[in-house]
Structures are given as C-alpha cells and as structure tokens.
Length: 123
Image 1 (cartoon, rainbow, N blue to C red):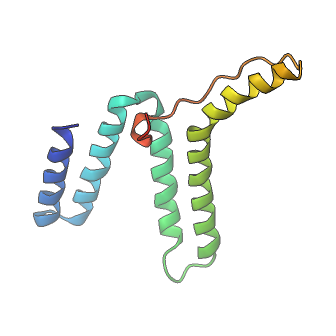
Image 2 (image 1 turned 180 degrees about the vertical axis):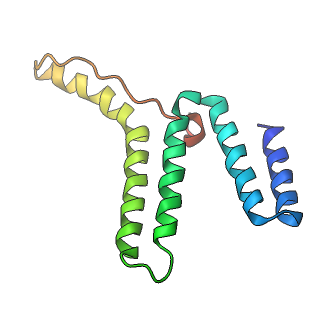
C-alpha cells in the first residue's frame, strides 16, 4: 500500500492532465480492482457487480429520463443491502447460536460472510 497508493495517485493525476477523461476513469477502475483483489480475490465479483449496478444507475439517473428517483432509491438500497450483508452478517452469525442454545433450539452454527479487507477499517 505504501507504494501502490502513491503510484495510483500519480498515474491518475497524470492521466487526467493529458489523457482523455475516460482513460483516467478506466485507470482508476482497474487500479482499484487490483488493489481490492490483492487482499480478497474471491470477493472481487461483489465489487464488479456493485460497479456495474452503480454505472447502470448513473445512466438511468440522467436528466430527462423517467423514473430517475426510483432508480436512485433502488441503487442506494442495493448498495446498503450489500454493505449490511458483508458488514453485519458475521455479527448475526455469531449471535444467533448463543441465543438458540439458551432456548434449547439446537440450531447449528451459521458461517459468517467474509468482510473484504478493503471495506473495513476496523480489521
């Protein structure tokens, strides 16, 4: 991270100075995916899906299109659901078996969804 982040910032600044803005955005997307995959390669699909969802939502929210407010609400809701699942499912999985054993339900422990390193500063 000590080398990758300054290199990414330098390249993005350089890309924005002389390149087409689309290439600068593409560089930022690719560099972010590489940085993310460095720690949690098996969850890159979540970030790709989130990027595609946000891109489609941004296109749908362009001025003059019908249903802009509904698209915005849908995209924000989908992002919050992803965040809640990957951030708090571990807490729910850790809490559920202890409560069920107190009540003698005999529930099996539930495995937690792994939180990607890039999404958590508390790790």
